[in-house]
Image (tube, rainbow, N blue to C red):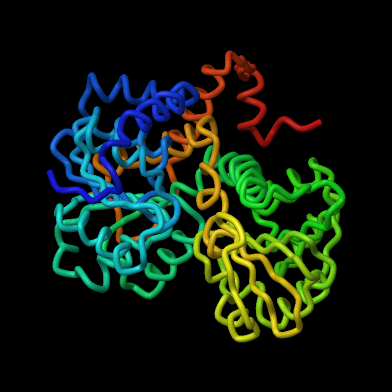
Length: 418
């Protein structure tokens, strides 16, 4: 079995951490139990480009239990947990191509390595795998039947491909499932981003001015958590409805040009490029801390910052201090990449339980229904979304009401008024 990881001797530590994560993933565990019995994925080859974390390991084990052959690479150069990669190779015999801190050349080498396995299905987080297939490995597209996409940024790219008529196979938008973005994006990103920023800096959040760029579900989560820790939170937005919602939620809203002057902490979560630019870095306070929790580091104009920087040093792990020409210091965290994975461990297992349940059931659905789908981006079927929510509630020992026949009739009728 071919693989490329940091150190196979880290496998024992990784196995313990995977076991710990599995204890908080009851929905995925239930799916795995069914998969072991039914083998719904028997014989398929799937290539996964995901963050190589303990939670992803649980998903890989579930897919393998269902009969699939899996090849895994990282969807971010800094997100790999090397001990987890080692455990998957040694204990689960899953080919993994991922090393934390790998350079860009190695990152794409690893993507191509999983594509060398000639997958029939893809699982992506950010659409780099799909993009590579459609540009550099087009000879393989004929054999690919379908795929899934984990995150907002990837879905934006894939919908653009579909609109341009270049997407060559159907893809399930896992991120759009209610049991994914309502929970993973809001609670997972909210907590893990704060976790990463604190681990990297050990700075106090309380009493600071914390600028959140973007008020989508991830931004909502981070803004709420930062406020909960005592920060004065400022939100920047380009979408008027989202900005209005932030105001109604009690946050200050202003343009980034103004926020740059008052912020102590900054974090981008927009999915767009150059959200914080050179002109914004120039007006920041001395010692400002800047991070990104969107998928790609392009949200920060690091090239623009470089142009006005006279010296750079790594002052502590995951903190790069830029001394600007005006003498002020700007601290960039985790090379501008996903700070919750670069400096911390990503989302808590209990929230990834639902996200990866959507991935597992999405692949199963694609296997059963993919032939009838067009080359487009599809939502997770509502029945799968609801089933995951029911399973999560059951695992939490939470019971809910059911509609009476009379209530069902009322909701379906137009003749029963006041």
